[in-house]
Image (cartoon, rainbow, N blue to C red; front, top):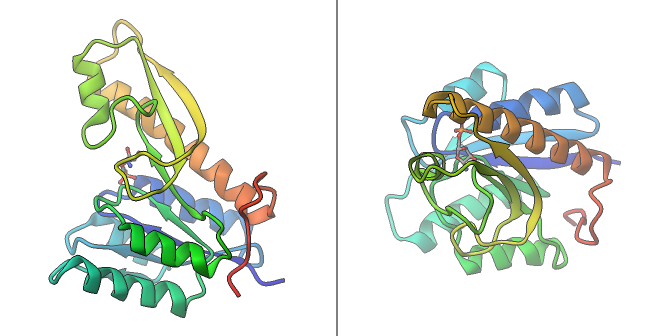
Length: 206
Ligand code: GRF
């Protein structure tokens, strides 16, 4: 059996993407293959980090309309027979057409996931940690969810609470979120690699 092929989409720092790369390397290439990291931002630090870790990278900037941009991305996904897309700080919404096309290639299976630093549906979008912090919430958390065309609206797969200690400042609290994100995302990657993701939607690309 061939490995499950993953593409990581990231626009920034890439701490989640690199945690996933490290996990995939630990799990071995026979089980899971990170085929490439894709970014839409030339200055994204994740590109150099991925290259240093020996992972192929692609930069597909949005210079034209959304349709042209997405068809370039779809071409890569097709070329590498990607089974799963893991969004890791990818700052661009995917269109309904894009999602449908990818799903169609997988016999209707939903195989695009995202990690988000809040207990969705609370605090969708950007700056979720800081907004929750400034609101003085005692608990927020991390959500792993399937991706639809909305902003952080897809079906929730896993959520974990990140509580806030009295003395925690924003930087410390942010660090706590990242630790939980990396752990949850890597656990999910392992399930995907082992084919034990307990849903009916895991299918191989033909
Ligand atoms: C993370 O907080 C992730 O949950 C959100 O975007 C951030 C990306 O951080 N979707 P990094 O680039 O993975 O460090």
